[in-house]
Amino acid sequence: MGATNCPETPRQKMIQMMYLVYTAMLALNVSAEILEAFVVVDDALVTSTDNSYRHNSNDYNWFEAQKTILGEAKIHDAYVNAQQLKKETDATVKFIEKMRQDLIYAVDGDSIAEVKIDGKTQKVSKTISEIKKKDNFDIPTDYMINKGHAKELKDRINKYKANVLKLAKKEDRKVLEEALGLNVDATYKKDGASQSWEQHNFDHIIAAAAVTLLNKTIGEVRNAESTMLSYLKASISAEDFKFDHVEGRAIPKTQMVFSGDSYEADIIVAAYDTKATPEVYYKMGADTLTEAGLGGATKLEGENGVVKLKIGAGGVGEQRYAGLIKIMDPSGQPKYYGFKDKYSVIKPSATIAAEKMNVLYAGIANPVSVSAPVDPTKLAVSFPGCSLSGQGGGKYNVTVPTSLIGKTVNATVSFKGEGGGKNLGATTFRVKRVPDPKAVLGANIRSGKHAKAELMANPVIRAAMNEDFAYDLKWKVNSFRVVFVSKGMEDPAMACQGAALSDAVKSKIQKSPANTVIYFEDIKVSSEAGSRTLDGFSVRVR
Image (cartoon, rainbow, N blue to C red; front, side, top):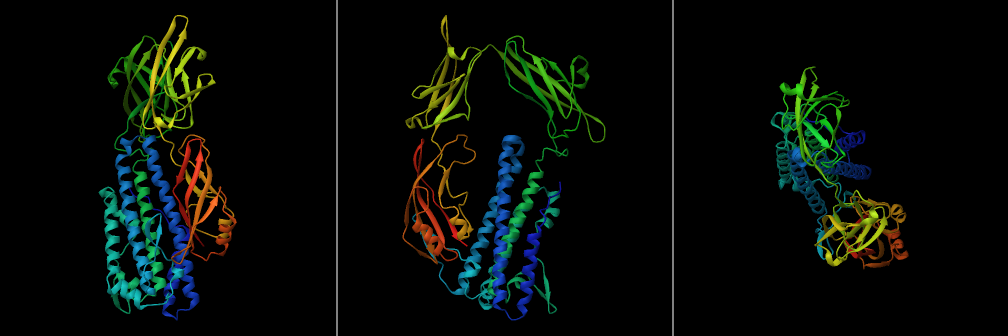
């Protein structure tokens, strides 16, 4: 299977061309305009890399979703390789970013600034626009060439590329190696002499160009990550007939059937063209069905790769069947794929299921449905230790006290008939604490660089649950603190009551210089689930 490369966008091509043009102009006198142009190119590279990071994050989320859709066993290898790819890429990007920061501080001869956030010491990152000696040649050359950091970078990139290629099949690695790029073993010619990759890129290069090139390298690593993600996604594509295993599957709507009802299932060909028109044969009471036994089997016809199977449920007990799916392969030859399944026919009984999920959250109303083949008004429902209120039609709200967090609740259902009560069933629920919501500024600002106008247009702190939280739980922001850090200097914290930024904070934002870091911390919120203090976040003024 070949790799699926991720072609450069027109924006990325423009950025690459701008970088080459500005590098070529270094042979001339380096003007302030050219130095400022490197700032523009560097900012564009940061934006492009951030876009790649978000795109790749969506791909990693896609792998998580496939565990549910296709089953963890089927995507295990690709999923594990994707997690390893993320680990390798993040470590390499972190390595290059540290080298970039160390170079920036070395050029200006500054000590690396540090700031304490929530009691932890963190280094303050500097951007290319903050370099005082952007046109300095000697220090970048000494740092990258004489001290061997360029060679160290080259070795790190080669190690990353080798580790990434190990995640692919051997027969695909040659094609992928070209698609990944990151060719740091190339040699170059200058004035008739050969140059290594390190010399070509970092020997006698001004600081602005060297820092920008390191940012460009980070972007190339993210692009290589995107290429590998596309390859790994393709390796588990459900539409690729070149899978090494294709099977027929019976997907029942339910495997518990009441006596007198019908068993229903969809018969599909997994990982095959949905345009195929299969024929399905099945036989009751059988564990397998072969081509030789088709004479005594029941034939079903379908369309679009799906056959509807409906079997009348008679006697109580376990029922089983086996069958064959006949389809035509791309060459026109018939192929047979076996399937089998079993189901149970039982007498009527009651079931209890949480409508949102298989757990109950403490402190909030949990909607629960109780169903049974009897009048709902004659059902007695019990959730020991909890508050239960009825909505009608077998629907209830269950409120669990926080004292039961980490424990279980054994819910029971009984029938109140003329002959007395009859136990219809029980279900055990796990009790969990409601997760903390996430705090954001305005619409959805939580990190990155933002213009003052954008920050002023979002002057409130919001707290909301993650999208995967099924309940509509509203949180009220009661108070928070704001800390401004500019050029390594931290101003005293400013307290805000309620969700809105105070006038003093908004005034401070308006007066803040570029690259000021604004920390929102000690965010206190409340809801019916209780009071919480949320993790803070920070943004940077553009």
